[in-house]
Length: 305
Image 1 (cartoon, rainbow, N blue to C red):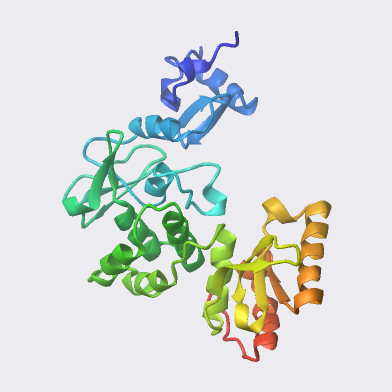
Image 2 (cartoon, rainbow, N blue to C red; image 1 turned 120 degrees about the horizontal axis):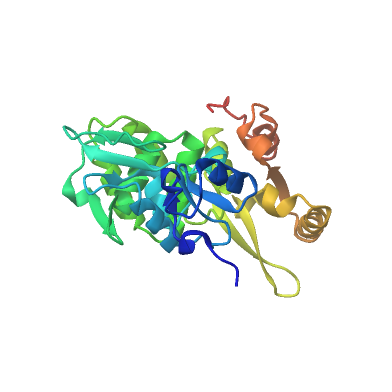
């Protein structure tokens, strides 16, 4: 039977002795050899232990005190929705908040800020105080970069963590909060139909270009009666826009399958497609919206982000 470090429980990096290591050097070597992995900065677990919500909660207990509240991307992560920036997803950073006038936590690898924090904005998850889903989504809409902010709220809505009308009402009531104008604008665009962050980024790129808001998950039926879905688009114009992410659309087989599917609907039903990728949507080249604008007969606005 293979021995699991620390009985599979997460541990802080300074607790290397309790985890069974003879020295900090041994822990560093175990990290290099990928026998342990970071749950987030300064907290580790045996690499064989699955990433589960229970593991995340157990790890959070190691850095969260009874005087702090888990917030922002770390809160949504505890709820089961990853809203971290792509560059941060492999080394998560706990974000905490305390009421104004309270001392901030200054632990290694932890970010803590002061904020207005009424009791109604705080709930408890497995013994950990955390901002409510609505407060969490509101904070993310205010504080994150526009495309990441919308993707975060889309993902939380898709996970059924809140009712959209409740989030709209909460955001509309914000007074004097930094980023509130952005949140009030973006909350009107939140849509459970986005199945990936990239689809959220692309939908925002389309709206910010001055085009009509596209419907999401357009349902179409082929000649054999099979249900198909396009990421977003305009049914009445037979125009679809799909986001080809790296995870599912980069292999030769995937590209051929996508081309066959789109070609069929182009030839048989007259659909036209404008495709997005991370580079086309987040980059500086306006080719994506120029191409869509040519089909829609609308001159796109200059890029805002």
